[in-house]
Length: 426
Image (cartoon, rainbow, N blue to C red; front, side, top):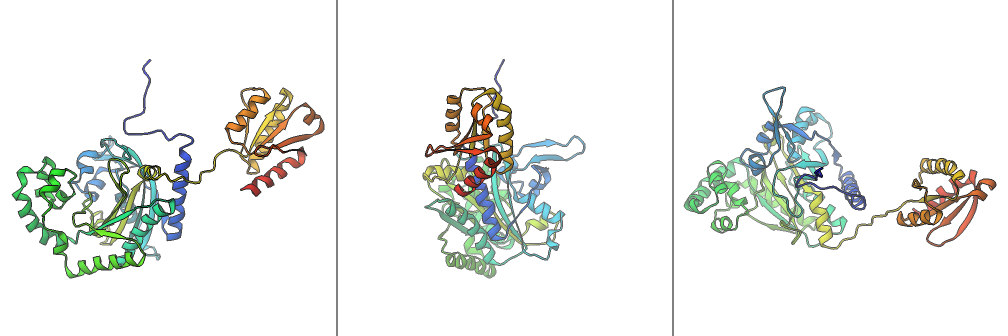
């Protein structure tokens, strides 16, 4: 019979590795608590229209990468979420979070996303994304706060050599002024651009600057910069963001070509990069989306956010040789010397677990020597040995694995004694 294999572009996260995920996810949640961002959980699938309107029909995500199916009970389609912001904003509008007295609304999410793209290092078709959104404020200080939240996570996990690339993509009006001059340049090289860029020229010419094709990059290197067409207000906002980043001692580099791959961005756009983490060096990206809430049916509310891939974060940690402080192993392995002791040992393990002690028991009827080897493999701090003499005496032998020291403890005192030792060790 043919063996069924994992779908391409996905991965099994195995014991021994999943603990790294637990650590990183816990760090992200704790950091959000300190920054006063609350968790939101949205569905894994949404109406396809949400992403068409929210992300943009000319984006690679909508044109090429979404997993969509027809809804059998209606005329619309459903899509596995390819990113988190659109769903969060949809929920913000639908649940009237704008009515909360605590404003701006500061939210974060952590969960799987789905994109049908070519798998490579740090990039999967199912991937886990951590993101944060701040909705309801136009203050450039919150732009800097959002960027700070992202970079503080990387820093607290031990990454170094990070750089923030920063740009302003202006407002709709700014881009309209820029568009005429950009089109003049792009039309001059249209026939030499890749097929995707040729189609984008008429629909969304700014996206041409986001092309990763090296020839397209060369052909557009002298294209007019959006920074030269910012209104006085937009330019002031951008300068304020830079000032706040400087105040936070967050280094940045202005990249006029940075436009990001989603259509909803306005004003601030940014990426956090680190060299040599695989096929791509971008760890995180985000920016302002001041028109998105209105596009999805709400009042015209400003917003800003970012998203990052946990897979890419773990790859970056591996590339830099960062060792996360993961503590493995169990607290106690209960060793059974005789068949008569099995039931008592089984009960003891349950009592230990209820007392907060991580405990395990042999279920393969192995000899005592093999059980002690299993305790070593599980990195048990202690072993509890129950045999014929212990049953007769109403005792348990407790052995500390690191030192080899042993003591005989009365059964009715054993739980409290071991729980205290474990707590002290922690």
